[in-house]
Image (tube, rainbow, N blue to C red; front, side):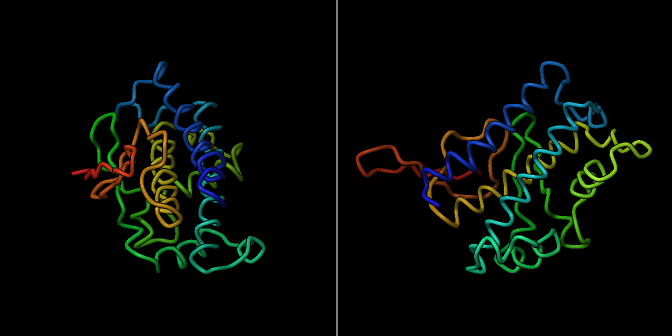
Length: 195
């Protein structure tokens, strides 16, 4: 995949999901008091984000293991954990939620359990939305955590394939403790640290 294809197919899709989430801020204030606020829109977003995480994780596994798309087509969250966690400090990566400065570590639970709680909630919503109160899992908190997880995994994939910052930048998240390089033109780069 070329850089242009990545920016269009992967990063562009992430930015679309981010913008869809930000559109909800006109109705639901992005504050912790609204973490359990649920809606059909949040449910739809959580399903879309979870599906995209699956796509990006497969692509990252493919690159790490030097395999084909067919080789990783049956991979699941346990396979992702085994492959990706063996390649750096992935589970401890964090990002800053630019809305309030909160530091998020959406993959951290992988250190102690099979999958993060937001992933379990995504799967409960996907497979059994009509059972009990599973529809309430489509809430502000799960969408924020899943989107931050997608942001981190997408940035890791981009960093592995290319360098510098994907454009346009995220309006919601910034990697914590990463040094980034932005091309400013004429062969010059602006070095930024997120600290």
